[in-house]
Length: 83
Image (tube, rainbow, N blue to C red):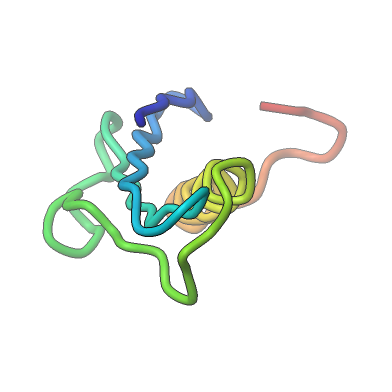
């Protein structure tokens, strides 16, 4: 299963792979932006630890991890602004 989330000019690509009944391993990859080259393996897929997860949790955790990674690159959002 696959989902793409846009965040602050980047794309967070989330991919789930079935590991057990109703459980999934999850990876995410960040694409776009000029600052991508400073991330490990030049934007390679990152596997989330401590899984497997249910589908809902897998997407949520990958989205939050991707957003946090982008926030580290760009710095925090200005106060009062969203996405």
